[in-house]
Image (cartoon, helix red, strand yellow):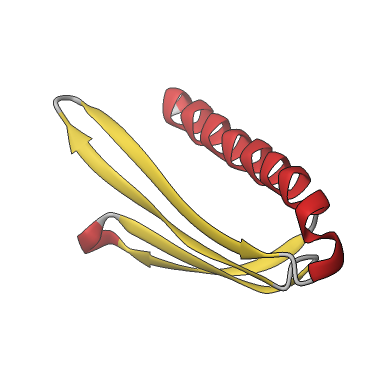
Length: 86
């Protein structure tokens, strides 16, 4: 799956909102929320998507979920690597 998104960073709320501009899905949006808790950071991701092809949505939804999860895990791993370097 591929998409281009726009992100809005709100440092005062420790939040990143995103929305798909174009891509394979009919729609994709959500947010990353960061919480500082007892010396560590908890990251919560909320994501909404719509495939937009009703006749095969039941088949494609699990595949889309897996692809989105893999993408998010990869992003978190990259962030962790950057933090260890700096």
